[in-house]
Image 1 (cartoon, rainbow, N blue to C red):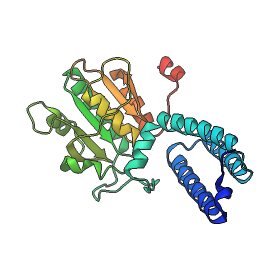
Image 2: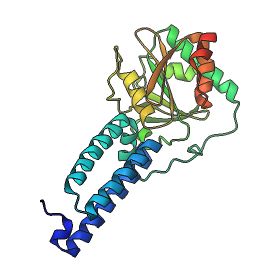
Image 3: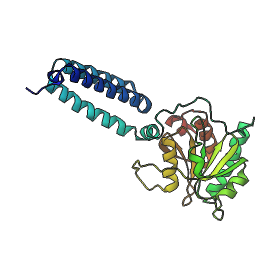
Image 4: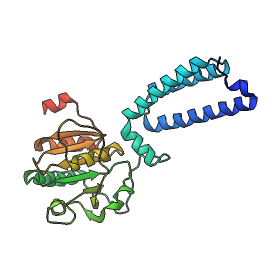
Length: 266
């Protein structure tokens, strides 16, 4: 029969038990930040109880089987939440505030008028097949990410957006980040997603999906090959027609999710 922790003495036993509890505490913290699913916490709790029982009663093979099953479960869970895991590893102790980050220039503005300006710019870019990527910050602050871009700090206007993405300018590569009614920065480069997708996606689309995996930002992408308009939200990409762009954009910015039936009726 294999020796267990108690066979090496009380000190070794309690040190080992303390280490196990510490590891599980770290895993609980990680799961809370990454998975946030009740099933994950239930699985973690059950495996912890089984492991402690087997530890105290020298059930060696039960402990080994439990550890193997737990390792497989946590690997699958973390792999299924790679986007959230990336955000957690980038800043494990970051608190998500319900209040949007304030860059210091935001003023009271007409939201409907702003969205109309965005629609005008996006449709013009789509018709001219000008590649563009615009990211609209919501609750998650993008201050650290936009440091690699060029500060703009100018009010949103269709003319300025069209000028920025014009191929002859130095700022046309990369994304424009918009906070409230202000263009905060241009030529911002995001880390592209590593998620496999069916079909061909260019660097803009992969960058848009990448930023949506680590934040709650809404990103609009215009393809320079087809003029197709797409939204990247929560790690997913959705293409929309010009005629419904404004409604879909408003829904995403207001955290409303359109069902397939709603889209079909439109």
